[in-house]
Length: 146
Image (cartoon, helix red, strand yellow):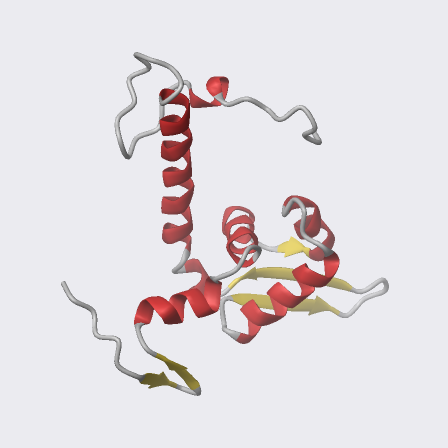
């Protein structure tokens, strides 16, 4: 199948192909991680989200959440109380992206299996599948934080 990459416009957004549009919305280092965590955990407070998305700065998390909210994938709920409480969750549009994130997670497991199998003979790697004992075979980095 050939995809047309003519200029297109949906709402106020201009793009050339639908893949480009998807990357415009979910692309970058942090947005997929934020979406994956929200997809796995439902409504999450900002501090818990920051701890869960390893390595993200507060500034980048705020920026990613604002962009995802603007694009309609994330909902921000403010509880009017002292101290203030804010929770983030996926919208229906954000939820529709969860199967893609889960497929990426599964592919990551399969690719980790490939990396292990390429260093060991006879471990029974099959493209597109994860090794059954993958979690036992994956090495934890020595400088990893528990």
